[in-house]
Picture 1 (spheres, one colour):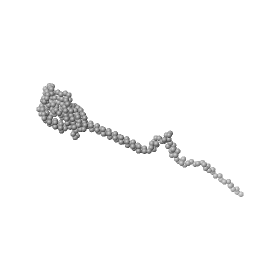
Picture 2: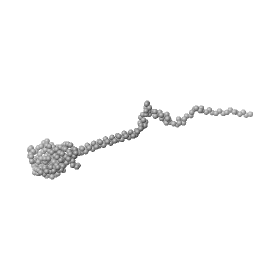
Picture 3: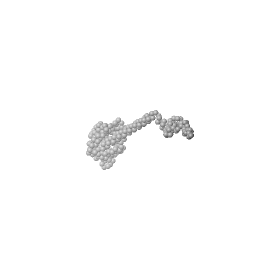
Picture 4: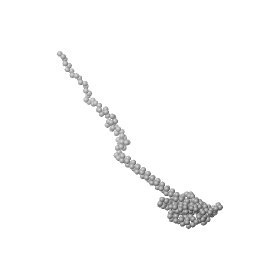
Length: 248
């Protein structure tokens, strides 16, 4: 008889139930992405007292962007106001300088016109003065010129030249100005040569439209005055000889 083997095959041993397999998340998830790593990084943003510091704390402050915008706006407004004030002050200073230059030029031009003439072109000399004077002063000058000086200049065939040494400006306010013009002048005629050095003409001017007009002139005096006859001999200036200009 054939003997049958009744021994059961031995099954391979199974792993113990409490031996846990590795978590798939532990194998696939980078260390930096784990909750534990995130927590550690967050802790690094805190100081010893547990308070958030640095860039992360600033980023979490409420109204950060509004505060930055307000600060920039205030700085911008301040810059605009400062620039505007500086421009305004510079503009006013430039206008004052330009106005003073206008007054200086007009006073100097009037001084030269008043003390310069050619006995053959007296009408031209007269017109130059009238063009620089106010209506009232022009009338006064014209009366003096045609009332006596014109005849004396013509009779003695006098010619006068004048140069401006300097112009001193006084107050310029509300369309009025003061100026003192220092002049050197010379008159040559059949009676001789008369030199007046350092004469002072005290003037008042008024703005008329875009121009300045002379309203008043006073001859203050001269530093030196001399007279020579046609032979070149020194003489004392005499009355009746043509002075460089009619007396204002």
